[in-house]
Length: 430
Image (tube, rainbow, N blue to C red; front, side, top):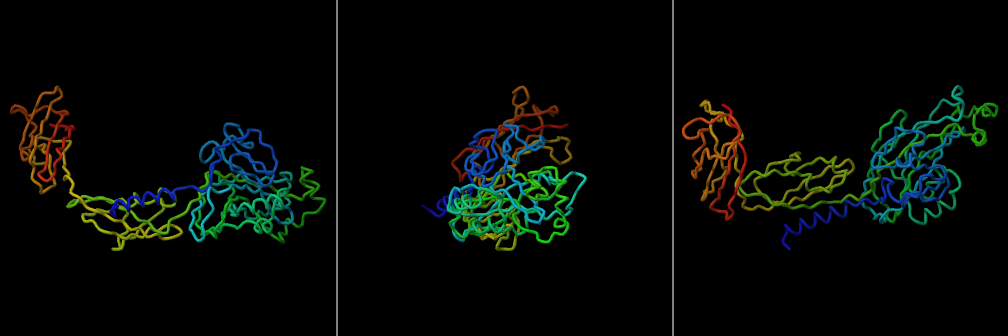
């Protein structure tokens, strides 16, 4: 296998390996059990996804399950999930947990890219609308965690019957760190893309999503709520547990895939011609590479370049979380030269666009050439085997009428065995 074929094969192999999303059923479209989903823990409602707690809601357009909303459209497809959390009057926030197995265990020290979409549904106060006993709203975040199969079994056994605190959840699953906290913002009704890169410790087999799991101690306005004030809460079952408010957010279209540490690509360009090189054509078809910028070894930062010579080129692919070296091998071959053919002429003898003549950007000799031009009725208006003879928009010595004319072109260069045939139209404007 020569180097060009090997590099092409390697590029295709890299694309296939690194284009694999490790989250199965990432948009919750498959394996729907039923529309009337119960609020019970440890139930697999859709293929591969399990709720560890009791309040996760499956939202599906076909089931008309939109949790009291008719304007909620999934980010992708027909379905999404809604997770919720609770703020207690002592300042502790707790959350539902949604877990799914990965299609393959993460590899140690491999760089991974995680992307998903989330949308806030806002805060729902337990108290009467005219009684806001606690006017503080601690930050609410999306938290992503990783673990293995044994971790999930332990998670269900130890915490499957109640909402978890941060300390409980993170004793089992490892939190994925984001460069910035993924805040659930009020008033944001559109889907927001969240993303990060991280290196795996190795062996992680499950991914989990939760809302905020943490404690905000000494939140004075909340701690001052008295038993008498709690009695004013409208829901008796909730007041017993001292819940101040609920919050919910939607999640959809989850992507998790490995990022290669280096890239190799190969292509063939035409000798003695300017070739347009599009660097994005040599990148894996992954969303993170849509954000890529480039740095050539000669200092250029262009993603589209004109090159005449082949060779090996080193390019740094700059991503938001890493830099990947790309080695681009360009082989050269002889190609038929390009030809420029005008599509409009104005025969007014001003010296500009007066005539129709194919122009060959080549030093190769033409050994076969014929140009024929027809009018709209199929009559021959012009015919020539001389590549230097232009059509002056005349037929039988007279200037033709304005309109569209049809041409056929046949040519062959001495260095190439293939005869080229082309056809098209030209507009005459008098």
